Image (cartoon, rainbow, N blue to C red; front, side, top):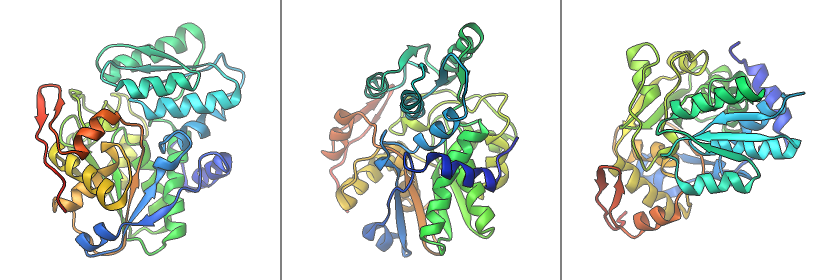
Length: 333
């Protein structure tokens, strides 16, 4: 069943003391550029370095009498499930594709989870996770198409509006839609007039393309600076697709060049180390693809990135992404 605002409040109680209460801070530079208060919700400060702990912990806490849990992940959801399972003393098997950066694989293993690498797409990883459910009796925790996961992510929307009820726009990184669906549900239940915009990279944007098509579609997964936004939404998507379709006011795509520059902005102006997926909201505003009419918040979703790539970006060097090269450029405000 589709989660409700009551489910989000219930999730807030479940995760309290584990995955809640991240700072909401102003960005003076982005405020000046946007012409409106611009706020950063620092989910990169979570214990696992990413917002995914909220939904994962809420879902894993509801699992009882199982052999363990499994999921497919592009990195941060797997880290959240691994952390939550370790807290419960449960076995966790995280299924990932070959496109997931090694730093994220290593981080999950460090939390005590098993990692299965399968194929070159999220669909391949999902198939392995489903095999573990059938063959070994594990409980699957979807990264986005699960009511408890969506409710957990929705607690971010609650916290933002509790801190700043005057926010008129939320800029939400958009991938499988669990974050966007949960945040939009919470925000619009509290303030129906609020604008919620989902933002993805312009290569392999599964939810954006699915909303445009009117049904879930498959996309080719390619390397991206916003690798956390990669992967499909599942052809049998039950929850996050219809919720994003109905609750998001707009979806916007940004380029790898725009993500590269926004990562520099967040680091040099706000001194924040963050993944490419975190800065798509900044990129959309800086590129003029989104204009603001009042106080705005975006979610800095995580910090679990390849520091070698990050260093290249901060020093203005080229970055190779499969068959595409993002041309480097020294930072200039």
